[in-house]
Structure formats: structure tokens, C-alpha cells
Image 1 (cartoon, one colour):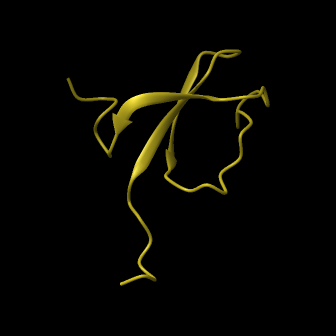
Image 2 (cartoon, rainbow, N blue to C red):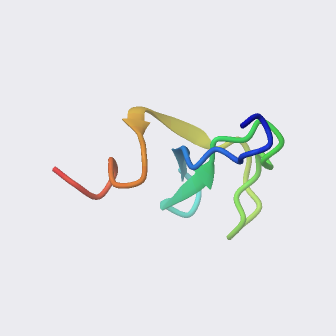
Length: 56
């Protein structure tokens, strides 16, 4: 099962445009904001999984 992609998500915030993104837990993901291009994105630590950011 090593060829099965992970469904884990990580949440990052762009402080420049106040946007939160849910990104795949992939080290090759870009470190710049997809909306405004600002760097770096701030990882929201302790928030993992598909519903973690949106569920209480």
C-alpha cells in the first residue's frame, strides 16, 4: 500500500491576505500563498485531518 496517496491535510495561513488553506500533507507543496504569492505560509500547528479546522 505504499503507492496509495495520503489523505492527510495540513492547514496553513497567509498573514498577508488572511487566507487559510487546507493542503495535502506533501513536502513538495509550494511555500508561497496561492492567492497573493506572499511567503512564507504559517502552518497552523495542532490542526490536522480533513475536518480539524472546521469542526469544534
